[in-house]
Length: 447
Ligand code: UDX
View 1: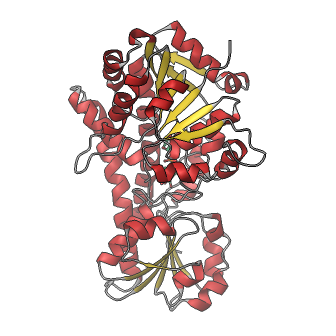
View 2 (view 1 turned 90 degrees about the vertical axis):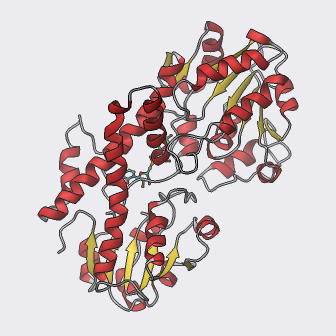
């Protein structure tokens, strides 16, 4: 039997990577987005966001590029997608609803409702977006109602665990594949799609719809909890003059705890962890299980308190009032190797300082354009040295490698006062102090 033809609906962080990875695995792929601009960008072989390795993968496969496999094409037409595909991946985003904890399902609903009328032959629709538990059940019923193929158009749920900055690697070599299915046929089709990563060792876990949906939200809740745990320990270290970096290293040697995701700092942000834990709490409430997740409220509060603590340390560093003080900020994105500033702790801290009267200048290797778009009133510079020139205090808020490699002596020549606050605990205190800097970090001793 010929390989199944794949479509990917929604070509953002998740979909653009998934489409390119599917082409890399040897499938013919058609990607759909409702934004013609995004499609035009992808057709030029460029990712709509900065993601290491993705531009190269697109150019390797997008039809029309010299030497490309031609296995990857894009469209804005649902009719074309319905005609083309055997397996349709839904990769649209599920943001937090404005002013609420709940997740906005309108893009997923619209994707299924737009696709279904074009499914005239057997097809598998595979949800990858992060959704509240119970959504797959509801969407399966909607699909059966709207698809001319009736029961031959089936739904499966296959959550995605990729990390920004490692999206290509995580998609091609996932540490596990989870599929929620209702039939043998759906399972077999997904086994065929993922045959290569499974042959290379990725575990393939088959389960029902609710469990598949819950695996994603519970994994993200666990990660968020781990970060807030170490940040709570940072608060205690600050009170007791302990060192959270040493503490994390020491507890991480216990295999049951593990070293990863124990970096204390200004906390988690991005398009996933913050909104996913909130949507999970909202959904648990609807299900009458809110008590089970009440700890996530604390996880969220600890996370937000770290941003506030960074603002307080900055105020202290400049003598008690931020008004008119010059603050040089290194980092705007929510993590390094990404241009994503959604719910970025770095940009949030910079914004709070600005609103309290400081003159803030931000530099980020990849995130400046996105930062400017959502926070146009902040000052921006094209280099680290430009951001810190004349500064009364320097804040390190996103741990780009470039910042770790900065020469504190050289930076010291540019600032007004050699005072640095490390919000990510990746700078070397001894190195900075040697060059005459007052160095403070979250959860670490003052000297
Ligand atoms: C996350 C999940 O890791 C991924 O599996 C899921 O599919 C999507 O959400 P991502 O949002 O790309 O991925 O970022 P991640 O690497 O998890 O980092 C999230 C945030 O936590 C970042 O702001 C990061 O700086 C912060 N973080 C991470 C810490 O503050 N400390 C840590 O130890 C680890």
